[in-house]
Length: 136
Image 1: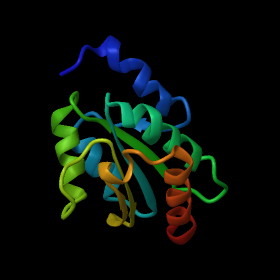
Image 2 (image 1 turned 120 degrees about the vertical axis):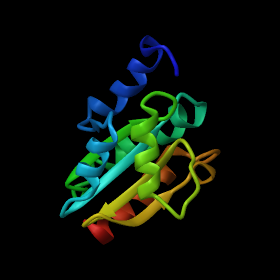
Image 3 (image 1 turned 90 degrees about the vertical axis):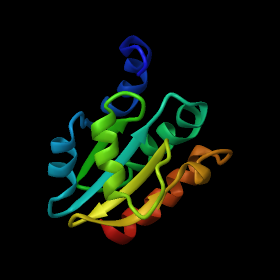
């Protein structure tokens, strides 16, 4: 686990634009097992989360058509909540950062770390917006 003072600004990058933090497996299950669309970001302290993932997520949720809920779990912090989110993301292997879109409790779009690393934030945001346009 990382010191909270270190991750607080990284959490805030998403919460200040409307993401809800999920800190328990029960929170994760309640958020995903619902009608409608849910966008889940597995946040991380790594450089690709800072440079690519969080900026892409913030940009994508500003789109006119977007998920009903935006939620986040933080890798390296709330381990049980992260594991619960990753269980919903199967068959994709665990990675952080990563992003998933669920519709009516079913995974419909996934972006893994290898699709985040080295890609501009706007390219990732465009990918997400395309999924939002299709499923939301």
